[in-house]
Structure formats: C-alpha cells, structure tokens
Image 1: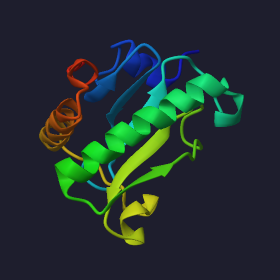
Image 2: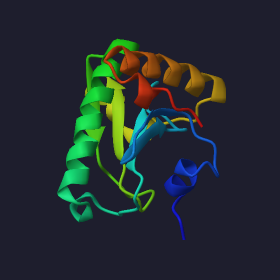
Image 3: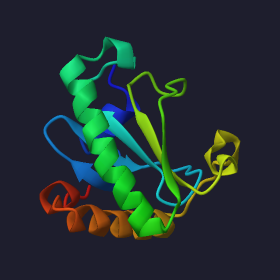
Image 4: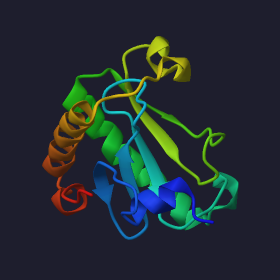
Length: 142
C-alpha cells in the first residue's frame, strides 16, 4: 500500500511543493514547527535512510543543503536544522526546519498551519531556491 508521501508525490493528495526533481521532492509539513518547515522525500519508497542506495542519500543531502540555504534567506533564520526521525510515516523523509534556537526544533511545538500560511511560506522558499539557480526544480507546484 502506498505511503501518504507517495500519494502526495502522485498528486492524489494535495501538497505545496518547493522542490521537484527525478529523485526527490520537498513539500511543506502541514504541521510545521516553524514557518518554512519542509519534508524532503525520495520518490522511491524506502523506509529507513540506511536502506537507501548511497547515491540517493547523497542526492538528498545535496538538495537539503540547497533548501537549507534558501530557508535561511527566505525566513531570516540563523540555521536550517536537519532531522531524520521517521516514526510517523514509513517512508524516508528529512525534516528541514528554519531555526534560531534549539527551542525552534522541538517537534512538540508543531501546529497545524492554514493553507494560506503554507502557500505563502512555500512561495518565499521557492523564490529563494530559484535565486540560487534552481528555478526549474523550485517551479513545480501541486
């Protein structure tokens, strides 16, 4: 049975994307810890990072760097924090969270955001990604 992430990637469930390429996508977390919190997900279903092919994991890390730089630019955050937890959905995903302190990365602070808040945050993030020279990857919306 496909994961919820596979269904978002396929367009069966709406998602607000800031990155799409042949290997992975990044979309807004609907319960962000901070504005601009995204999930970076491989298109291929794999449950754990240690089961992912090395080249795929390397690509995810490269994209995480691009998005992290864009998050700092778009949201004025001191850091972009990366976390791989994986307890909630059995499909590898990296949390990328704009943060100014350790308090900003506590999952207990996650709260639902409105569609308008998510759309505005992803628009800012797509613009910052495009400004780094990745307009094609940042231009996809679903």
